[in-house]
Image 1: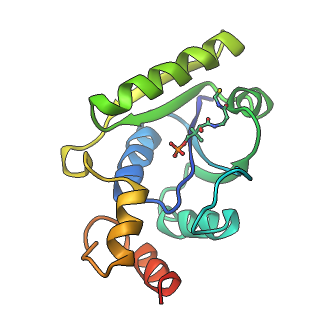
Image 2: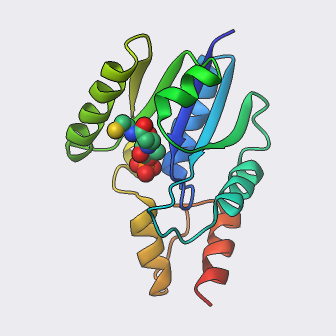
Image 3: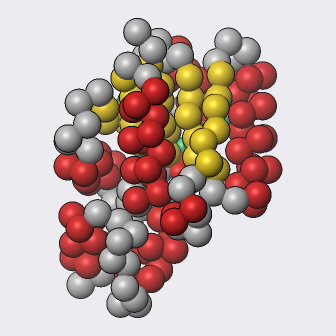
Length: 158
Ligand code: PNS
């Protein structure tokens, strides 16, 4: 059985993330969507809220599991017996950071592979930060996040 992990902050999940997760789910037996618990960051949504939103918007995909992790991704990968890390690349600007992380992960754990998937062109400019900022100032985010996420964002900024 092949298991992939799609790790991230998912604060909140966007249609860009969903595109990568759904495409990954077609290629492997199981996808674990792993939300990073990072006490150094000041997220808008708690880890539990992010997990709940992910669970709701991915409930139709049977081979997806939502989990959270803290510490190093490679340790989580080993603990959960994951075969591959899957990351989305939106633009060249993502490359340097992702390259650095993939190489650091390889140094820490040479048996762990990372593969990159190009984001659907429609979502190449999307990020959770851009979504949060737009919604905070009442800009339109229709079609960029699932309706459930949009409702949760509007509630947060009420
Ligand atoms: O959605 P994000 O914030 O871009 O996701 C980044 C994430 C969670 C994939 C990355 O920060 C991560 O793997 N963090 C865990 C700590 C770690 O293993 N860092 C790499 C070695 S320095």
